[in-house]
Image 1 (cartoon, rainbow, N blue to C red):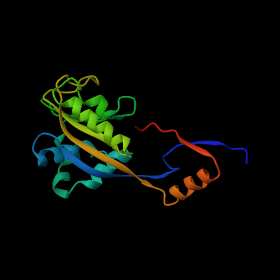
Image 2: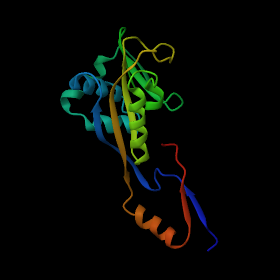
Image 3: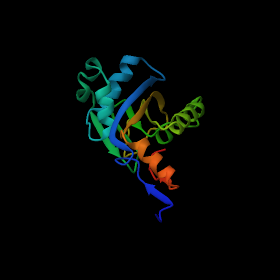
Length: 180
């Protein structure tokens, strides 16, 4: 009776914690190569995003995913990206605002599109390619965007009903989240 504002987290409260890939948009490069690189980037399946990407890809893309990497850098929340590659190339999967070089031609518009998708409630990660190796957690300066991966979370079946109840009682609900 005395509550007028309720602050809550999204994951596990409004969503089930399950993530799925809504779509993969190949921005540059051969689609098969990009999907195979994406499979290798997600092959560790140590987080929900990697698992969702792995589950989305077909057997042809997944075949040999772990064998393609000579080295890898695991995902870090502080860094907001993971990477794998060979002596001559790197594939980096992570937050678009971190891994996409905004000053490169066309990338400003690409990042604006990412922001638009995020405003619609989805999350986007980017797969970028570089002709150089990641060294000491430093991304190569020249990176080309290969794909944008749009992810969505599964809402709890009762989320809308619960929020409607609070609204009808005059309680303002605020979602506090680390996601865009």
